[in-house]
Image 1 (spheres, helix red, strand yellow):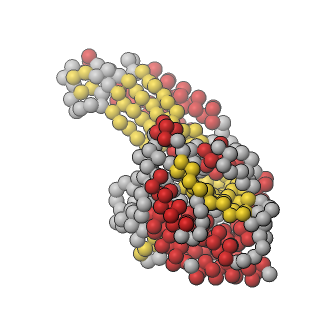
Image 2 (spheres, helix red, strand yellow):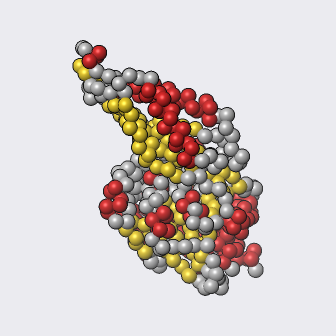
Image 3 (cartoon, helix red, strand yellow):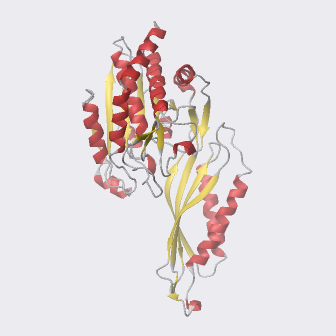
Length: 409
């Protein structure tokens, strides 16, 4: 019975795959650059497309004051609920927000163009792809006409790039959902059960502006920033000596991703702002990590007379470690991943941080799996020419549909 059901699920996905690709193209064609984070229009378009499949998407707009205080413009999170009977609820979460496209594209970042079996566009791989994976897996499951238990929820949210607190975090805090299992957007060749944490900070280095002709009358904030940068980057050498026990995660590291400062070429800079990102392995304590970085910055600034520093935390995303209750979900994904992809699908950790930690923090067993290549690098996520192999989309949809069937049949 089960093997026949799997065949029928696979056949439905194949028969409707052109429709799935068009759905993903339509999602890519509505920009969700974050910042600025005006993402409510994408939620409206997604809800419209879902309605075409007979799915009513509940729209949950986050109050404007909260969104704007967070540095974004608009967020409307979506929930689709499909109830089949008594039993567990499985939530499928993917995020629609994404970083701006940047430069260097050879394809329209909002075109959804398909070339040589690859669909190009910002968020094609991370993670509008799994809006499609999860929607069409659910449609395939319902098309079976089998008696099912429990239910499925689609959670399409718009705050992952800023930490998820106004996406899944907000839905959970408002009591709008409490699933028994959570599956979130990932890649096809591994089931991810752990991930790094992330601390982001803004460091403002203050000096004193002066005319470049009389620099001694000022205090060069940029020189102070250079001292701080050198001290921060020196930490990466130390971090490489710390190893995680989680497969797929190596060591902590730090990146300074943005620097702004100065007023003109002939003016001694009076202020420089640095934004840094510190990835934390699951074994690290976030409070200790933040305290250590603040000390490194303060010590470096102390060596620069006249320099003062303000430090503001922008984001603290805790790491995720697996909950024991995720075994049925993980086992089903691995079983069907191997059957569909023809190779073992291992469990691993990822150096990324995700919204999934917010569900796990509420005691909800979770895993990360969806449409994508073997590595983030191959997907070009956050780089030019982000792309998704359509065959990975097809097969991941089958794996998720089969997994839902196992857990709800």
